[in-house]
Amino acid sequence: MAINSPLATQVLMISLVFASTLPAAGWCAESVKPNVFIAATGGTIAGTQANVEQHGYTAGQLGVASLIAAVPQLKDIAAVTGEQVMNIPSQDMNDAAWLKLARRLEELEHSAGLDGIVVTHGTDTMEETSMFVALTVDTPKPIVFTGSMRPATAVSADGPMNLYNAVAVAGSAAARSCGVMVAFNDQIHSARYVYKTNTTRPDAFQSVDRGPIGTVDTGQVDIFGVCAAGTASPAPKVPIADIHELPKVEIIYAYAGMGRDLIDAAVHAGAKGLVIAGVGDGNITNEALAGLRDARAKGTVIVRSTRVVSGFTLRNAEVNDDTEGFVASSEFKPSKARVVLQIALLKTSSLSEIQKYFDTW
Ligand code: DGL
Image (cartoon, rainbow, N blue to C red):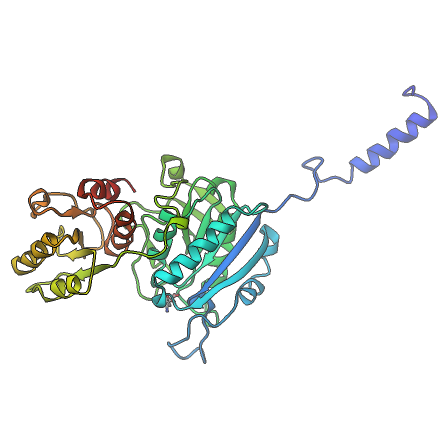
């Protein structure tokens, strides 16, 4: 068709009118939103209180549909679906709940059409559950834990923005190599490094030794590039399909004048491993040390960690781990050191191998 023919002129005019209706950015269909799945487990984010004057509240009251409905802006950033995997306060988390959640997450990780997963969870044990998931679930898609420090009915509830930001992170391409994270109070933390450090405040979650791996400000995700350095581990250390029960591992808190009774009792109760929340750099009294030596002689694996909120527990500081046959927890504080030891004991009883896991996982 000659460009100067009447028909060609009409086609050109129609094309120009149509093109002028497109967004300034040029030809594009409505931007495709990521598909994000919310696996709800309970906690304060789903909590309610009788009235705002009360400090008290009940966790695990609202279902996932209520959580999603409370944040209508979610539909602007993602196509969100979800399910109630369980609805409990997270102080009630246990091995069976962990196995159930991890198996469901593994299924979701391998379901087509999903871009990321959010887990809403109580804050009391979020540091432990997220660590367990990081060590046992394959994570080609990011898994982002979140919750709230204030119940949904509180003045300035923090749950809605935490949920909005967690969905933004889960749907973000930048987070795809980051494995399991915690998004809380506008920060993004690796599940390996984050701990609850305050009983009530919205900024309770802190990566005490390394800091956050990113920020998320009203949905704007900024990963600091640390993920590329390997905080993620796409392959699980022990696949959840191979786990049917977890070894019994206890944590014992050290203090001035500590005796050996709790150590003896834990071993008698069948503990396969003990994590010591030691004073200072993982230290204990001589009487408690005698108890640990007897426990070690019976085959119990001993991990020296610390009750101190930050800093690493390295080998052969004031306690000679080589002589005692102990493991040092490296940067894992007791709550995570217990999870690491449970998973390590599923793989080996070799102390050198277990120490390597604490140093590298
Ligand atoms: N019961 C606590 C829990 O479910 C409430 C703490 C919270 O979720 O913020 O972990």
